[in-house]
Image 1 (cartoon, helix red, strand yellow):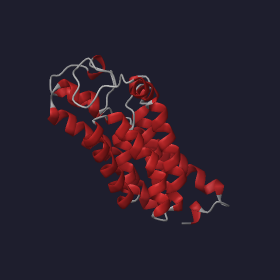
Image 2 (cartoon, helix red, strand yellow; image 1 turned 180 degrees about the horizontal axis):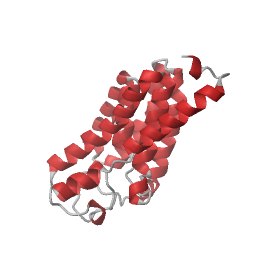
Image 3 (cartoon, one colour; image 1 turned 90 degrees about the vertical axis):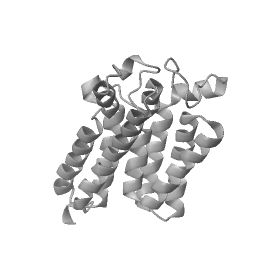
Image 4 (cartoon, helix red, strand yellow; image 1 turned 120 degrees about the horizontal axis):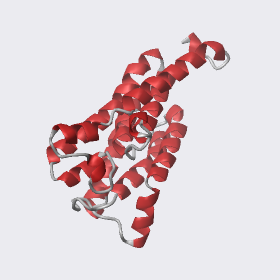
Length: 210
C-alpha cells in the first residue's frame, strides 16, 4: 500500500503509531488477573512470583484457569497481528510488537505485567504459522524433557530468529530477534536462578518464584 512506502513517512507514521497503540491496548488486558479473580482464586499477584502469566496461574492449582490464561494471552498477540494486517504486513507486525509490550508493561497494573511468552507465541503464529508451530514445539519439548518453563521460553525465543531465517522471512527475522532479547530481559531473574540451580520446575507450589 502507498502509505507503507518508506519514502512516504508523513502518511505512514500515523498508521505505525496507531498499530502500536492498538496492539498495546489489546496486549495490556491482564487475563491472568481477570480469570483468577472470576474463579475466586484471589489476586494472582499475591501468589508465587506475583506474575500474571499462565505459569504462575498454574500455581493456584487450577489447570483450567491456567489454560484459559495461556490461550487468551496468546490469542491477544495473534489477534493484534491478524486484525492490523488488513493494512499490510508491516502494520500487523507493529501491532504484534505493541501487544507484546502491552502484556509486559500494562498501564493498568503500573507497568508490571507478565513475561510475554504466551503473547510472543501467539503473535509468532499469526506472523508466520510454520515458525509459530516450531516455537511452540520447541517450548513443549524442552518443557517435557527438562521441566523448566523459563528455559523452554528462552530456547524457543532464541531459536525464533533462526527459524524465520531458514523459512526465508526477512521481514520477521529482526523482529523475532528483538522480541527474543526482550524475553531474555524479562527472564533475567530466571536466568540467574537457572545458573544457580534454584529455578523451580513446572508444577512447583504456590510459593515458588518464576
